[in-house]
Length: 351
Length: 118
Image 1 (spheres, each protein chain N blue to C red):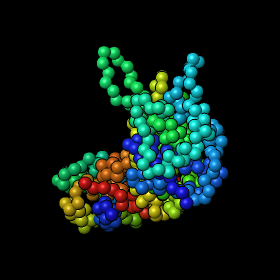
Image 2 (cartoon, chains in turn orange, yellow):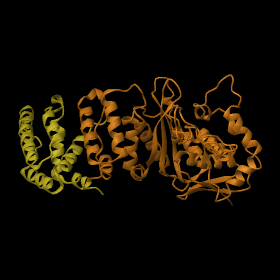
Image 3 (cartoon, rainbow over the protein chains, first blue to last red):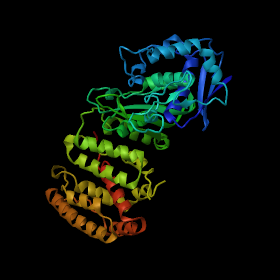
């Protein structure tokens, strides 16, 4: 067994992408070796069972089935551009320095290097972590400028790119022209067998409730809890990391990000009634149609707030709206089964 | 397990919840469209107000039940008992009005009869 290390930085999404990216770089599409990612708190440990392949899988840079175009959406193509497109650069680094990438990640002391200018460093895109959009902190005097972009060493950059392109989840129904925000979601691997993770992500429906960034996040988390409840020996996610970007006429602007812990949803998914609750929330309470308005939208927001913070106030707001929805039969909000509601009430926090 | 879950299992709360469920139902389905009680229960915060709200609710519900009994001769309508009322007031003193109201409203969300399913 060979161990690889991804030391964590303060960029949560970047760290998770690096962990998935390095694991995928080693395993490739054909699962050449068995790869398990463990979250050890301060680092991700990647355990590889089997002989490490001699070179990277060339399919890693194919666009079909990946999110490569989305990862580079902040990259502006210009005719007079003298540098190569970043995907070509990434491919070049992976093919020419594959052994070096693996070597540096075998060392426990290797930590990504960030800075304004790094020898051989690459631009840290906001699609890899929204915090990157803040740029490098520097003094600005006399004239205004947007500030310099952050750079990161090329080895961390390339593994994070692979992770972002193949493991970042971009809700399908946010790809519409009229959607006003973009979102990238990725589950944090507490202990994950890479092969099973890919199966789960392929099976997961990427159409989410896009009323707001929170509804999308909760909808994804509900689907995740539903699909992984009986796979805890192979897949254990403890949270979901998310980044939000606001669409503008120009490049997307940073819109926030964070981590949503899955304790509540994983707890609910432990019982049959709980699974039925999740099914009801997924199928009826979080509609995927982005044009949804009125009581359906209000209930989607209320159930999202409740699942984000199961407080008494949030429950009361949800109950009140749901009863109003039930009164008009046209809304097609049906009463709950008693055991299902009982299951949900177990988690209400009363201050 | 949360306090709300304990309250939800209480029979007095269950009876008041069922009464609320019937009260907010459509007239064609034996309800009395008593949305005023729903709003009042939604906003009540103090014990004294809660007692008044329950009193008003029971008065409206009684009228609704009598109407139903007139339309269905020989059958008697469901009503929460006096013991239930005492118990609910006691629970409100013990757990707080907001928690008790949330528990009552939770019962109003569930199926009251068979055959009502989607």
